[in-house]
Amino acid sequence: MPRLFRTRSEKKGLPPGSLVHIGEVKAADISISVLDYSATFVESKPSTPEGCKDYRTPDTTSWINIDGLHKVDELQTIGNAFNLHPLVMADIVNTDQRPKCEFYDDYIYLVLKMIRWNREENRIDSEQISLVIGEGWVLSFQERPGDVFDPVRDRIKQAKGKIRQRKSDYLGYALFDEIVDNYYVVLEGLGDTIEELEEEILNRPSQDSIEQLHALKREILFLRKAVWPLREMAQSLEREDHILISDVVRPYLRDVYDHTIHIIEIIDSYRDLLSGLLDLYMTTISNTMNNVMKVLTIIATIFIPITFVAGIYGMNFKYMPELEFEHGYFYALGLMGAITMVMIVYFHRKRWL
Image (cartoon, rainbow, N blue to C red):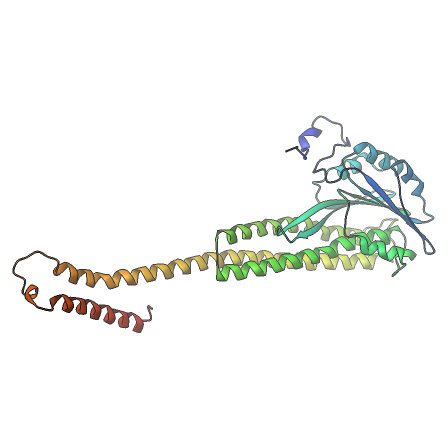
């Protein structure tokens, strides 16, 4: 199987800002699409790395989306067209970045984790999204085609809401907000899976149940690491006195901040629920084992006096009076049956059965 990952060790010895793609190659080629719009018109068309520089103008708002991060030469061309710092470009092609925001003189750089819930495998699929917000333009760098931004595209093309009347800071907020809102979709799928697992543990716990439980705990941990920095990002964007962030957008950023707090609370509740499911699994297994041991103990206890009677009449002494009884065999069986019945009634009255 081909090796699809590069590690940080490949950057060893290189100057700061050197572009080395770190992560999985998720796209066969790099594709660039552009949405250029104003209050009165919108134009959607593909572009080339060299042609991206034509959209660096404050006259309209341009959303330039790049799918694929593995061809660093083409990305470097785009970075040069928008005067992006070498360290920013290095972070864009390094797909194991922690979510963060950085403020530069003429643009703002955001790193986000876009996630989807894989229902078939009950796990989270994740990719890194880098947003660069400048005056009149927004760059979005994705690892592969396909994203959660279709509602934003529809609002731009159909002039829904206020997005066509706003500037690039509002577009950047809209993309940020769409990523955050999609976390609710993932949490809904995760919650359904947790409920199904809870029912399975209550009714038919198995080794697969505990394996799935630990897998979900890992997904929750990853999700928490992806969401926790978003709270700081939304708060920094809302409070930062930057020329690109208008007062009109700040209330919307505050709303995103509230959403991140809510998401973190849901994640923490899921984490507590999974910890409780682990205790429930251990309790269920323990109760099942106790029931099995109780049944085996009762059976063994019943057979102790029966074995005693059988042992007495199994002795080979010549002078045993009962050996001469005509119906002694049936008397012995009756005695064993009577002992069994008395013990069962006694166990039942003690609520051991």
